[in-house]
Amino acid sequence: MSAAPSPGRARGAAEWTRRAERGSPLLIRFIVWFSRRAGRAPARVLLRMAVPYFFVTAGTARAASRDFLRRALGREPTLAERLRLLFAFASTVHDRVFFLEGRFDLFDIAVHGAELVDEGGTILMGAHLGSFEAVRACGRTHRPVAMAMYEDNARKVQSALAAIAPELQKDVIALGRIDSMLRLQERLESGALVGVLADRTLGDEPVLDLPFLGDPAPFPTGPMRMAAALRTRVLFMTGLYLGANRYEVRFEPLADFTGLERVSRAERDAQVNGAVARYAACLERHCRLAPYNFFNFHRFWR
Image 1 (cartoon, one colour):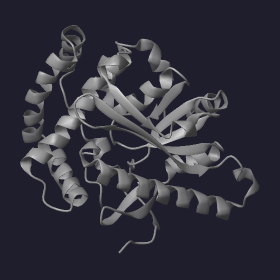
Image 2: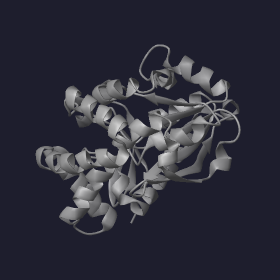
Image 3: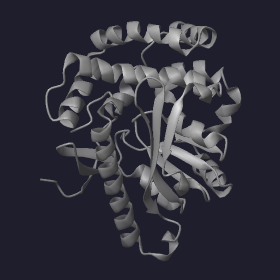
Image 4: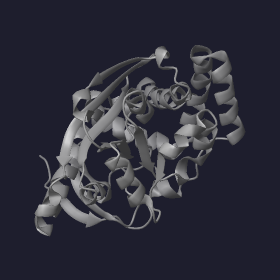
């Protein structure tokens, strides 16, 4: 039985924002260096070695991923399934090296809903589900694709990857700054696609408690309110990792706020809340479809 959307407010800073970023900068740089010289297949051997270590040492992530898989699969996950989720995560991070180098020939990428992104600036609202880099790879040869994100929790990986394609750093829009909305508006007015991950709350912000894999979970309304303020279309996006070198990129409509200036504040709030509920339902459906792609390694439910 599903619960009705319940407005609320997250309390305090979210646990994931307080957790230190894992990984040695030197080791990350070595893996990037080895991958670029040895190639994708030999470098994936390193992932096989790293995943068990991460599983053993990352207690919070281990418990959170087990909780998620139990909900998504409808049963207790096996050890192999829990390791499969971590290996999928490691694979998507590792594949960013080759996507950034433009080595799209290494991958088999299927795209569904490409016709939805044909016109005008659009916000692509995703989650920590699959690979955003796979989504950006599909659009890079046709339309500009920018990423709006909070950078503080991935500085080590971002620093190592920035050395591969420094020109792409101009396509990263840091959120939470004075000029963030202005930069977003400029990109959208130029016809760019802007990706944003909307499944994590930062802490003290408005949320909707929505049914998600069996229990209510807090979904931030901020990203959707930002889209409404920018008067733009919103599509759900994800780049699901299907194993080996296969990805499946999906786009689905969530909302169209282009005519929002003509409605009352109450109606605008209702449209935003309805869009967040559609986002949560879409995310749940894709989590059941591809359960080894949800890389939100923190306590997601209240």
